[in-house]
Each structure stands twice: as structure tokens, then as C-alpha cells.
Length: 378
Ligand code: CA
Image (cartoon, rainbow, N blue to C red; front, side, top):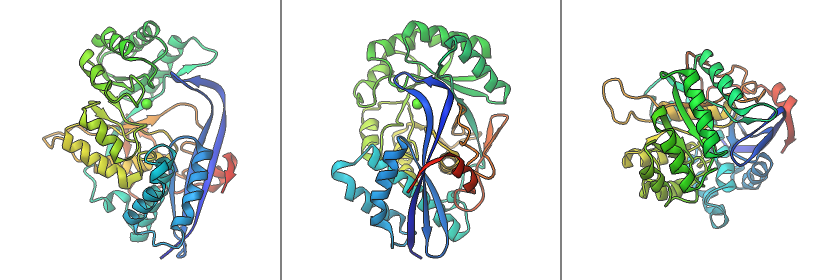
């Protein structure tokens, strides 16, 4: 069996109502899906985290290095791609592009052997995982506090038992929004805050202390991700567990973070950190270091499915009676193609999502839907 072609599908949807994170404004939703086809007629799908058009360009640049190779040589292909881009790569687009290729190869391998990806990875510890809703950005044209409270209440009404909101807009305003959300949803819903590195160390410590009595499960990306040495200061200076890792790519970056115990909760993204091949190693490093893993997820059904297979194989840490299950991050913000790209959407019921049990990633791509949103097919 040989890889015959590598194609990218860049999807775009223009939002009716833009929204802000701490440092960026979302006017559109973009995605870069990777389709790898073999000479035996098998097709595998992957997805890249981050800027879709640049990802597609890098995937195209990498494709010449893998066409003609046996797609089951997943580890040798991973190392070859990484090594060829290493000198100007190591993280960022080189790794996000490679992640999409790697996920497609795992999907292909599962279809070749007729088993789910989690079976190839050694077997699942669980068949379902609790999910948390990600949302609570700052919407344009609405009062932020009112809108975020209403939005999170909607997630709880839809069955979610956990939600994450966006902060990093200013300590005073953020404190008021967090308090209003906690007040609205009551004490039993798990609540997380994500600053998208919108604070400096002084602000992050202040915010964490200001909301310390609001039962916040974690404080995500308090400061910019390069400031690995500052993360332990945030952990020491305020009582909320600190999370991060969505922009750390490759084992080396995670090794640096784990070495200084930068976070309490590590958040590798399978579509960014180097794919399934790299994420299983990062997860093993985190387990060895005694750091909890809650994967970052931001993408279509392809990204969600790949993440669910990783979540299925994360070992219970520690193993015990009624072990704590890992959590799926489930973006709920406006994106009409997120689940529509799959013929059968991945859904939550009472806050629980089933791990796909079909071959490969366990989802089938709806090419008609791709056609509605595609802006660039390479
Ligand atoms: Ca985040």
C-alpha cells in the first residue's frame, strides 16, 4: 500500500456576529482538513490547528516527502517530516501542518486494519467522556456580562455540567463577569476561565486571588506561552490550578514546561502538538511527571474525533476505584460546519460524549458540506 495523494480542504465561514478573545477578533471560522489517499483506495482525514491557508501550504510542501511511502510507517514518516523541517520548524506551523498529516495516517491505518484508532493505540480505558462547553467570548454588539451569563446558562440547559469562559479583558471587568456567571449557574457546574494570555504576571495573580472563592476548576493561559518561567509564579501566587499548553508543540516544548512544573493541567492539542503520534508521548511524559492532561480542542468533527481517541487511551491517573475521567473540550461557539463536515455529528447528551467506535477516526466526511464552505482545495 502506498500514499497516492495528499489534499487539503480549507474551509471558511463568515460570522454574523464577530467575537473577541483577549488578543484576537474572530470574523470568520477557518479550518484546514487533510485528505490522504492510497493506491488501494483508502482515504484518511486529519486536521491542522491554526491559520488554515498557511497550514495548507505547509502540508502541500510536506506532501512530496510522503507520496509513494507506505502509510502504515507512521513513526518513520513522523520523524522524517519533523527532521526535514526541524531547522526552521520544531513548533508552530511546521508542527500544526504535520499534525494534520499524522492524524490522517492514523485514520488510514484504522481503516486498513478495520479497527478504531483507539484500538491501534493499545485499547480504550473508557467508551465515553464528560465534555465541557467552551464559549463565553466577548461578543460584538452586546453587553459582555449579560451575553456571557446567558450563553453559559444555555450550555447548562443543554446538558453540560462544565463550561469555560474567556477573560483577559481587564481584571475588574473579568472579576465581575466570572462572579455573575457563577451566580447564574450555581455551585454545581464546573467553571473554568481562559485568559488567552491576556494578562501579565501581576494581573494574573491579582485576578486569581480576586475570584479564588468562586470555585474555578482552572485558570488557563494566564500569561503568554513563551513565559514558561513565569507560569510557576502564577501557580505560587494564587490558589487556582493553572492550565496551558495549546501553543506548545512537540515533545521538547512540553519537556521544558514539565521541567519547571509550569502548569497543573497540561493541554496539548492533537491537531497542533504533532498529531496522535506525538501526543501519546506527551501524555506519557505528563503522566510520568504527575501532571493532569486535559486536551485542547478547537476544530471540526475531525479534530473532535481525533481528540476523543486520545481521551479514550489516556490512562486513569491515578488508577483507583471510580477514577476521574478526562474531559473533552467542546467548542460551542458559532461554526455551522464544525459538526456538519461529518455525516453523523458528534454530540453531547447530559454532558457526555461517546468515543467513536467505527474504523479509523470513526467519522465519515460529508463532501457536499465541504463543498459549501471550501475556499481553497489543494
Ligand atoms: Ca484556550
